[in-house]
Length: 354
Image (cartoon, rainbow, N blue to C red; front, side, top):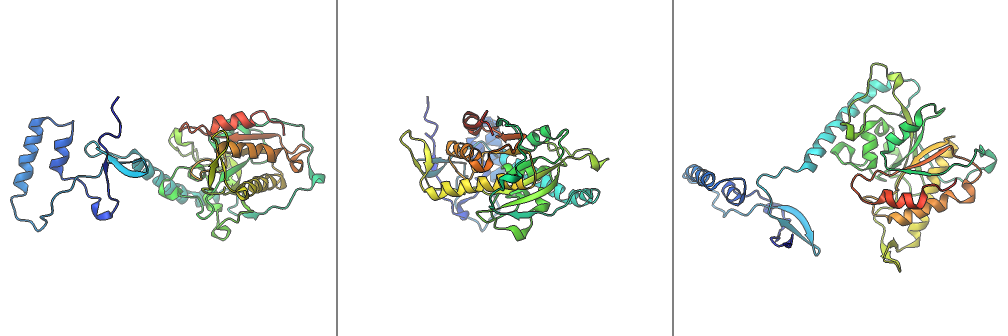
């Protein structure tokens, strides 16, 4: 098998060197043009360049598709005029975000039961005397979008389902207005969450979470095209409660005896566990008995997934959270990219009694 990096060439990232290839060079290298097409195009180009021009700089080869190899940024030779699916997706999602933001004020005005208020909740411990003493239940780990998991629980629920928003600590909604697609952005595209994330709460303190009690769902999921829901009767639109908490971002890691990534600094372990406690306390103090959690910090934030799953289990089994607080406790771990978060969380948490 040929080495996939065989034709790799070094690339400078200086903006002046990020130039597109001259059309002639691009066509010469493309497998999608016949020799006759190449010759015809070359002649046309030559006729267009008969007139004198001030730009006599030698044409540079166009930059290819970026890749990393041995720590060096490189490029592979691309097809002519490659279209970035990621760029197209970002543009589409940015348009979805703009439309969502524009529609929300009118929709929210029709619902007196929905507010854009939110509250910063800190780490006060629970009073066991206030425990509802529900029957024990078992944790379920499902491969699902967060909102879809909440909506599956919503039927017949006396109170909106609480969901965890794995938030950006500094920017409300993360990059949702620019087409980013992490879990926080996914919630914002489909709901009024962004309207409740007020600047006064940012940056989110390490020992706190933002509680948004009433968040309206106005769109279907991304896999269903983010279609707008039926607005003819806004009173029928579902409402959830959202707890926004930011994980430790890009912690230093090391390898254990089994060559698995773990935290290098125990301060990060302590902080992550405290964040988990704040999330649970916020839900419990606001009388939520059904909650959808997630793989906190196990995506772009770079936390070790197995360690995080184990920490969730340890926190859920702490004495403070015993006694019967939950009717349903679900981890929605969408694994569309095959990152193995779902597999790890399912192995560590599914079936744990709480």
